[in-house]
Image (tube, rainbow, N blue to C red; front, top):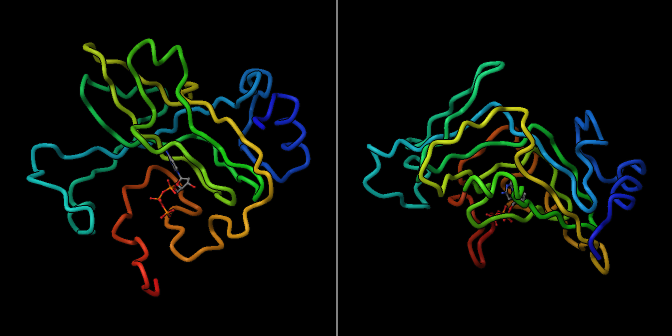
Length: 195
Ligand SMILES: Nc1ccn([C@H]2C[C@H](O)[C@@H](COP(=O)(O)OP(=O)(O)OP(=O)(O)O)O2)c(=O)n1
């Protein structure tokens, strides 16, 4: 079952689902989703220096991303074909019996802005800000303003709460993240391993 606005409000009031800060619920809570705003930090890939990324080489991933912060009132220009990591302004706490999906907003989709390349799932138990995989599929640069509503979260109720929610498990690499976080795929648990 997907939560409606009334269900979302009930869960927020009960306090087990958290989206904060929720400065204006009238604007942010949609009929069956919550709009999330763009944060000020971005992680850019240094295209010119990248011969090839080996996902398991931590040093390589760290070397190729550079953090930049947009000043108060500033904007971030996303050029055609660009791919950067952004962050939601809000942090979320997902209870063990919900799963959240990060979705784009139609108004930005119509400008060719997408907010996740492939990964759009927030696990039961996840808490932290959400890293956005931002790209511009269009032909014109688009100015993104921190604080703008950039994405929306929908919530689906599980038939039973997760037995092993995110965060309780070893290897929950993104639990508690603040700001955009680069891939930590090198921290993947090995099959049969002990990480
Ligand atoms: N666009 C997204 C999608 C997810 N997440 C957060 C919430 C998820 O609960 C967490 C982990 O997502 P995945 O399970 O898709 O990622 P991995 O499988 O790579 O990580 P792990 O091995 O930690 O499960 O990352 C995020 O910040 N931004």
